[in-house]
Length: 266
Image (cartoon, rainbow, N blue to C red):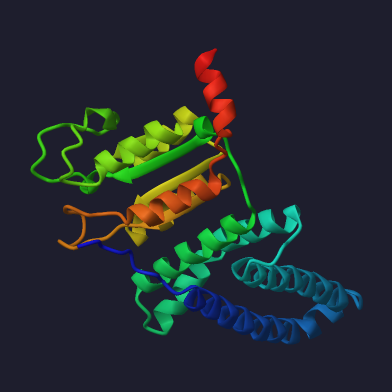
């Protein structure tokens, strides 16, 4: 049986973000209204200056959220706005998380939606990086628990027996030329990022680890592929190989067949 990854909804994160922004507009007006008499007594221009600062911040935030929606829809955006939108997405994650907690929405659902939104925004940037500047990391729970072969740091120790997906990913890394590592946690993943210095990262993990990983490697763009947990979390997990290959092919800049054959001859 072919296992397929869950398709999280981007709508949840955007709805919570929009609701948080609307609440912030109200709070900002109340703060300005309360502060007005005191500011006016100090200097007659201060209320206007304070209002301009507040409106500027709120405008930039609202413009960023609008760009985020455009990015999800796949609409073309100037390169500067794409970077700003990605920065805003990561910066406002905890605001959205707090709003979701007040509304009793599970953190897992919010994290899934965050990863989906982040993926859409990165894809909208239409990045292409050479194979040797693409880093792929997966959790060690992707390996069969009963396997005796240690693949952490060196996945090529995998015997490719077909018992888990590690062999498929090793084959793909050799075929395309990207860096591939199996890590035991965020610390080792960050070490790999510092060592390789990639231009982009593709990671396979649960929604919690993908969320923290995307924020850890920022501003390096990263694509998250949700793992599949037929046996529960952190034990004999799987990955949708088709979805993984699609994520790689969207971001990797592979040479044309003629070029690659000429390099081999040389």
